[in-house]
Amino acid sequence: MRRGSSPRRRPPLAALSPDDSGIIANADEPAPFVLADVVGVDPSASAPWTPDPEMLRFCEPPALNGGRKLKVAVLLSGGVDSSVALTLLKAAGHDCVAFYLQIWFVEDFRNTWDACPWEDDLNAAQGVCETLDVPLEVVPLTNQYWDLVVAHSIDQISRGRTPNPDMLCNSRVKFGAFADWLEANRGGEFHRVASGHYAAMDRVPGILADVHWDDEGVGRHPCRLVMSGDARKDQTYFLAHLSQRQLAALTFPIGGLPKSQIRQIARDAGLPNAERKDSQGICFLGKVKFSEFVAEHLGERPGAIVELETGTRLGTHCGFWFHTIGQRQGLGLSGGPWYVAAKDLVGNVVYVTRDYYSVDKERNTFRVGEFSWLSDGPPAADDDGYALGHGGEAARLASSCDGAGCSDRGDGAPTGVSRRGEHTMNGGASASEVDATKTSELYCKVRHGENRYRCTLRFDAGGGDAGTVVIDGDDQGLAAGQFAVFYDGRVCLGCGVILEQPAREDLAERDAAHRTFANTEGEVLELEGAGA
Image (tube, rainbow, N blue to C red; front, side, top):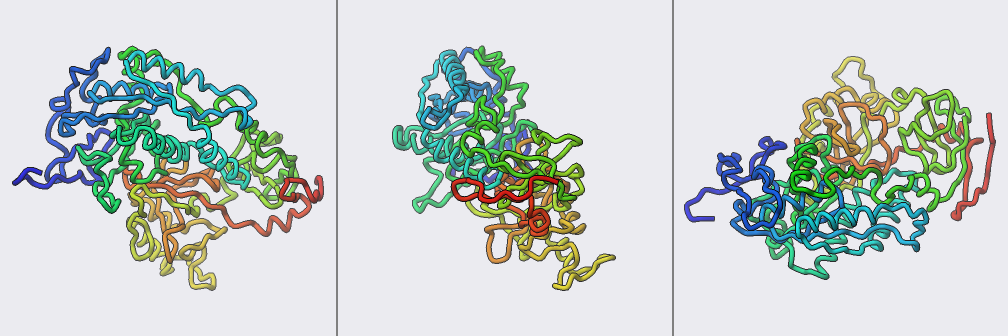
């Protein structure tokens, strides 16, 4: 800092928006200038296209970075998003090297379908690098991908959970194993790792990853992950499992641009993949159907499909791991629509209903644990355990039992209201607990997409290892194993894993004739009752 200058501080949370440049100014205000006036485009950059300087706002242009050019390792998938990210970084004047991560299966991993699209992806990436005159390296991470993502996903599916391998692919492979590879093979060479994710970074300008930590390894200049300018395409959900150290080394050049503009940039820059379709589906499956993948690795274990309300057996499934809560397709039942409402993992029973929206009154509340916070620590909580203080007043109102119709359930808590850390099966969240979400600035996403809920998060007493979430609406597909991602306004805080609901002992007793059991090798030990 120059002598006599005032401190430079971040904008307050309220100042962040999809168009925020992340520029730090005095008096907690965004810089009072037009970005194009100071960013410029590097005239020495050998690019076939000159962008509007406003497009470079998330590229950490040298003019806003103390004149220092960055050396950036750019993850190039062959898709248009990462290709445009590379194009913008090069136009900004940075020294870029592209890396394609080789994470497809080989025969040893029983990828017997020969349907992985990696060759198309690599060819597209090579074409982009030839157009931009950027070197491309292929990094083999197949073993790490299997061990850190695929094997974990298979294990979670076998336990009846609904994992999100794309989330773990980012934290464990793209920005985990690849970072380890860079350190081992190109240690200290790169200032940043870039990708084509739709997300934005809020960081102190000029602070590089190599000076982000003090001698004790404590973060001096924490970075914040901010939602992108395209709500429908925003990918902060998939980045919420990162650590602060990982986040500090990253940059997301396209974070503030809408998808339509990304396509136009690709066309204007003459990229050969400008019209290439976006990839869809689970990252490691390629063109393989999910059911085929699960059957290949977990096999089949037939069991009963039972109507939740009546206990009537309606059909047979091939294994509970093929089905997730809220699923509507693939059940093979007539007279529907039918929805998967619950699963008995021990007895291998899949419960379905035609009245899905009135079956589970707790679809506005769920338990969450296995937290991962981008700041490496949980958000502040009030004396009642509510994250950021949102929800405490409503909980006190509910506990005081002041409302009309409030009755004591015999344990000191009003009917329909759970004690702290307790998960109830009846009534879901109380009206006052739901009301508390209406003014909360804490938000929650339970899947990728533009939809997010206002919510409250109350940590369990005695620690922050788990907690209870109440959202301001009903959600159809809350399933154990899914990630719930939390936001303070537009700033992503981190995530937790949705936990299992307590087993329904009443259903196990009622439907004993429909339950089947297997040994550790998966062999059926008992098959009771085939019908009715």
